[in-house]
Length: 175
Image 1: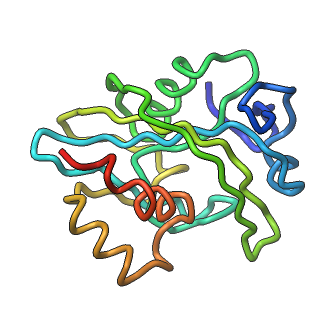
Image 2: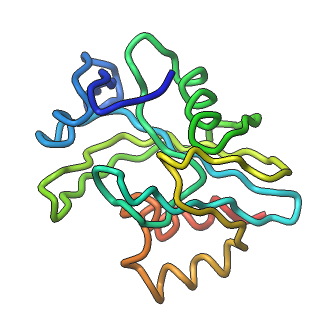
């Protein structure tokens, strides 16, 4: 199922219980707490697959971020939504495991606000992704240590949530 700004995404309370659904763009305009997910795919060499968001995205365009991220859609469970979005954005699917979740709130210069309980998944996959150009401008595989250094040197090139995860949960990435 392809996501659009008009689709309904899951609103949650502070305990991550679903309380309803609303349009994605409206949720970000109002800063309503909602459920998101972030997927981190690694290869056998321990490198993480990251991507540059398409330059046409409605927020954080052109910034680098984790392998895939999105929101829980109405009438889908998390597992189905995670796999559907990974296939849609990056052109492949992989086994992923839930690792942890956290809540954050950040307002962007565009006036949009991300207020999310973000569920983080890790997976392993080998191959060449075939990303959707409407979602992804570029991609690369990078060592976690190198990535942490790059984020510290060039923070303006990365999405807020990706920096937050890498800066606050780096211990989770230790192999």
